[in-house]
Length: 380
Image 1 (tube, rainbow, N blue to C red):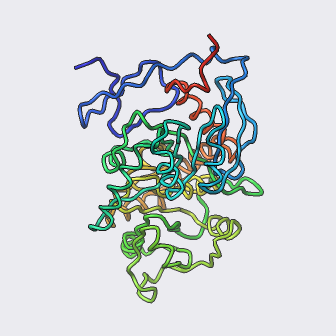
Image 2: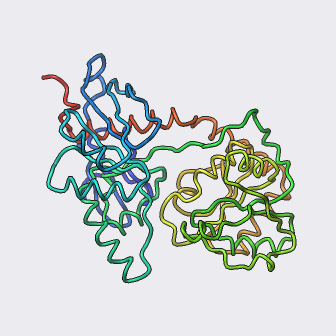
Image 3: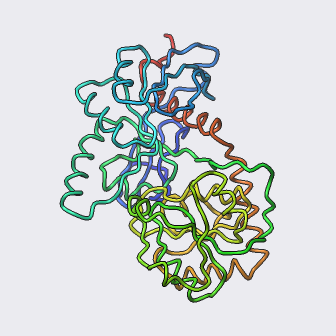
């Protein structure tokens, strides 16, 4: 067997790894070699012609990466906007969280090697019917034209298996909280209820069963059943049959409504369905942590792979186990406070949108260095 750095099979390549790093996936017994990166010192003090075209609406128009590469950006909204720039020098397409746009560009660029196409937070689901399986086959084909993927979670094993993505084509970038509070909220464990919050891949049924066992005061936002179905969540209990201790909270989906819902929570519970394979709930997790709340998440991608002491965890679709974790956090004030403090520290350290953009720019540039893109080749 070739010499390898052995890391957990659920952890993907992080941009900025040492040169000639070999990634060993113990689950498959394969090594994925990353090409040798050039030293950042090759670029310090030198102007490099890089142009990022992206649908991030507030992306910085001029930027400098941590490795010293500088460049500019153009904001694009449609396939036509992107393709109008495709003949420009030093070009990289960066698509944020838009499968339709990603696949349209992949199709349009299928017979072209450039510009490179990078997908950020590309959320794709499993298939459960013949129709959706055919869709997965078509997506796997189109993904061959995507040069690199930037994810907000590390456990990409199942995602790569389903969609045929190589781990060496991926990098991990920490996400950020999307809410901002007027003042810091103390992570003191105070609050009125156990809150189940969010829409993507949420398992409300397991939460209801856990609360039924406990009888603690609990709350959920007024459900938008169409949105829950669209995002793959499970909510089969009729509202009139909810456990007596659960109340419905008004939610117009504004930032102010979300902040009000979080302020009065003592615990925030994010039960995620077992078939999830992406970072469902990461934004809600970080918002809750920033609000100083003790968060209880679910073992799986986007939670157990990126959080440690900042989150308590329960196995998916296990009401008994979830009830046990909720009971511990509700009754053990020190555990609740300690978890909330760690979560708030992390959420603050990740910053906001500007800091996220810096991390994405660094990941794009580092990948380009490893891939030997012409726009990042230092002068000979």
